[in-house]
Length: 377
Image (cartoon, rainbow, N blue to C red; front, side, top):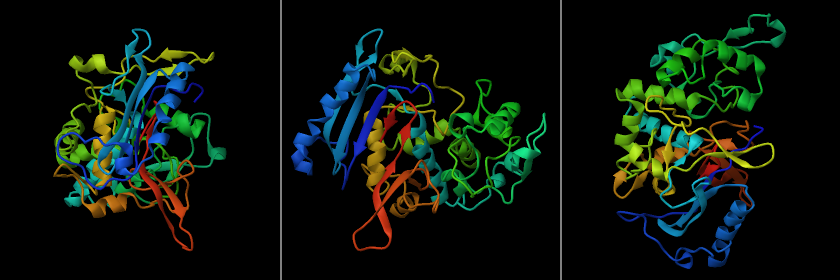
C-alpha cells in the first residue's frame, strides 16, 4: 500500500502458566522473570514514534505467567481533540479478528458439527463448482480465462488461507483477479452481510487451485458465514455467547455501542508529505460481520484472548478449546510454502526455529498475527 496506516496497539505476550479469576493480576517484571531494564526501554521507544509524528498513539501490554508486568498508553487517540490515549481505548483491530474467527470454528469442530476436511460447499452450496484463474494468454477482451477447480475447498483450506480466496489488488497485484472480483461484486460497501459476499464469491475465480498456494484473503469472511449456517446464530451473537462473554471480553464488538464511541481511537494514515490524516469514521458495521477484519477491541480484552490460547484453551475457569485443539492450530499447515516469509497454522502465524543438534524445526514464537491498522499480538 502506498499509504501506511499509523495507529498502533501492541500486545506482546511471552509465557504463561495460569491466570487468576477476575482481571489479570499485575506483577513486578522481575517477579515473572522479565528484565525491568529492558521493559523500561519500551515506553520511551513508543513515545518517540509519537514525538516524531509516525503514529498518533497506542497501548502496549506485556504479560508473563498470567500476570501483567507492563501496561503503557502513550500519545493521543484523536489528534484533533487532543484526547489522550488510555488503556481502555477501543481500537479497530482489523486482521486480528482472524484468530478469533478460527477459534469460533474450532469450537464447532470439537463438537463434531464441522469436519476440517469437509467440503465447504456441504454447508455453503454457493461455493460448489468453483473455477480458478487460467492462463492469461487465453483471456479475451471481455472474459478472464478460467479452468475448473480440481477439488472442492475444504474447511481446513479456509483456516489456513490455502483456499484461493484473495484480497485481490491490495496484496496480490493480480489485475485479472481484481477485474473478476469487481464484476462479481465481491467487495464493496453495497454488501450488507457476509452471506451476500459468499454468494458473490461463488461467481468469481480462485487465485489458485484449492490447497496449492497460500493466499491472504477473504477465507475468514467465509468462515464467519459458515459459523452462521452451522450454529444457527448470527456471527456476532455466536462470538459473544461462546467467546467474548466467557472470557469477559466486554469491549469487543463489530460495531462499537454509541455510549462507548468516546473511547474509540481514530485511524490515521500518512499522506504523501508524511503527515497523519484521519480515515473516515464509518469503519465497522452492524450487519456485515467480517470474520477477516471487522472487530474492535481493547488491549485488555485481547490480552485475555491471548492468555486463553497460551493456557491451552482456558481462562478463569472458562474452557473455550481443548489443549489438543490449540496444539493443532499452532502446527504448520502449509508445508514448504511461505506466509509472508513465515509458516501458518489454523488461524495463526508461526515462526519455526531449528533447535541445536535436532533435525526437526520447533516452534519459536507462535499464536501471533497483526492488523492493517498497526495492531499486533
